Length: 118
Image (tube, rainbow, N blue to C red; front, side):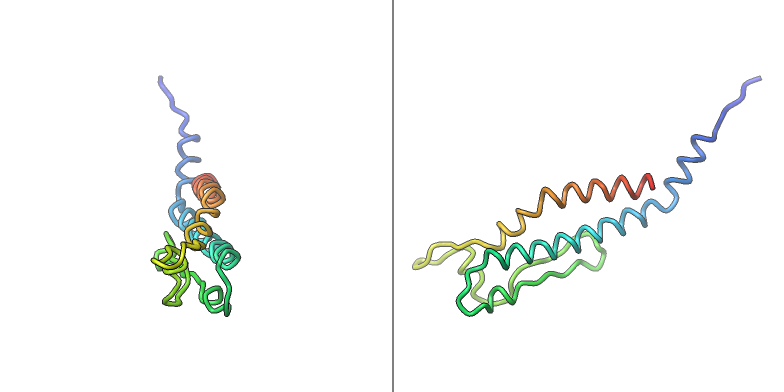
């Protein structure tokens, strides 16, 4: 007679049940944290004359929770970021975002692990 122990498979199935929702919740949390931290970094790097550009920095997490948009809303921000024919670039958006990437990658990895193996 042959017998099989399926208890490990049953535990795996139980762990995976609801994993999608747990992973999505974790990813959404990472997007929110990374968006907020990116804005803080951008504001710290932004050139300040009146403070309007720094104050206009904000972020929004996408409706599906899988991404975000961050940056300033004043019309002249791209001129500061990329420069003009009469002004050298003074980047603050891209460096502010890039500074958050290592922590965001680590947090996304942890959210995946925590979501699959609660």
